[in-house]
Amino acid sequence: MAIKFPSLEFFQELARRMEENAAEFEKLGFCDTVMGVKVDGDTPHLYALTFDVFDCKDVRELSSPEEAELDFTLEAPLPLWREMFESIQKNGHPEPTYTLNSLSHVGDRMKVVYDDPEGHDKLYRFMATLQAFMDQASDLEIEWA
Amino acid sequence: MSYYGTNDFSHNSDFNLRIRDIKKGNLDFGWLDEARETVEVRRRDPRRGLTLEDCEVGPYAIDNTPEIVRENRGLAPRGAILAEGAEQPDLGPSLNKKTDVWGYRVQRYWEEAMSRQWNVSTDIPWQDMDKHEIPDDIEIAFCQLCTLLSEVEMIATDLPAKWSHHMNSYFQEVKGFIATQAIDEARHAEAFRKRALAGAGLYRASVRGEHALKGILEADSYSEGSVFLHVLGEGFILTLFRSSEFISPTPVEQRMFQLVMQDEARHVSYGLQHLKYLMDNCPEIRPQINGFLDEAERHLTGLFNPDQLESMIVLGGKGTSPECIRRGIEVVGAFQGKQIEEYFHRAERAGLPERRERSPLLELQQRMIAGVLA
Image 1 (cartoon, each protein chain N blue to C red):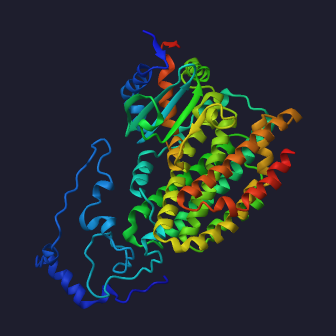
Image 2: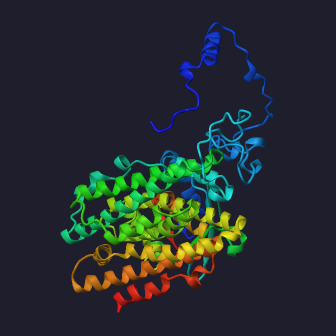
Image 3: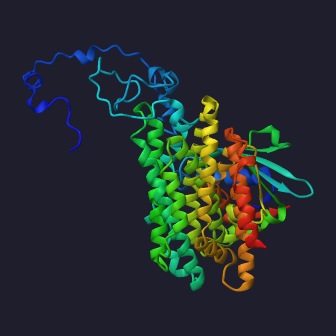
């Protein structure tokens, strides 16, 4: 059954798959961060994903960033999120220009919003885990908003 | 042998007689009678196992350790019973103040480092290298970058190793963390060497870059070395790794940079927390750190050496045609600006907002980088 993007159910499904693929994430190591995902569009959506040890233990939709202590937030318009997930779906992982790092680095197509530099650095400290989390969508049937 | 003990135990008759007596079964059990405070150590989160933070209890906790450690100058772990008088040897640690080395959350960085170790030989998909055709100019540019990064990683291995034995053993968590850094950096040097040798080979060693790196190694104190290496140097290198992931010719190099980036960011975080701890608890050191950074930031521009800059431009633009070079200059200019801005933001958060005003980096950036763009 297709899962709508953006939606709480979409990220809950990625979290469920993360738990299901425990061995992959245990190999990558502890991941402790609260990450924001903002999907810009006619109706913007902001999600807080709480990573704890080897799991994404909580997924919530926020009405404002102040509702959670976010270490950093990745912000991009809906079409870019769509391009990223479609790239992941081509062969299980993103093409070089669609990794989280590439998208958020030169050109800033995806914005990294943060207050504390240590929170910002968590994006890089846990990059392999966060990328693998997004890659869980590789064979998910997605209904685009 | 440069150290001869005050006692030759192999010819000490009291000692020999006592050992012989014990072997006859005459134990005195004096060590069993030492009074110890009972502490409760338990795993707060079974998935993490027993962590260093779980062990921060009673007399063993760093919070219950004096700011200046005077009682121990040997190898005793924090909380152990020390011999009375002057029997415990003096190993001459020079870093005996907590502010000399400590950083907020250092125990967590240790646990993170231990759980996120990886293996260059098996965690990078070397088997996929043959699946991708890389043009010669791109491959050589990439190997030039790998050569510089190997040099950088050498110094980042040596600096923590140089200072570890100067740290009082009561600061075990910091000694442990910088030991993980040494192995991380050794692993990075391994990765860049292997990638270069699997491709076009190693290219030019950097004269200017090595002068900059010498400045890190020759810092007069651990804190100066740490702020130069962890906050300034590794902060810049972290952004360089991010850029290198972005401009990597194939998914093989991309994976390599994803993995090295994680380690590097952890080192930057420790450095930031050490600097913050130092500024919070020893504010009188501010002029010294600022004076040091004035010079360190000048040193660092050596890393913008021409061979490295040109190779990054070729990688960023994906070729050597005029159009590629124009694009490459844009890409490199953008990430160099980011390097400087992120450094100022970290310095500000650690308690040194004045770096943004007094740093030579902005002027140097305008003269060197903006000049290239023009």
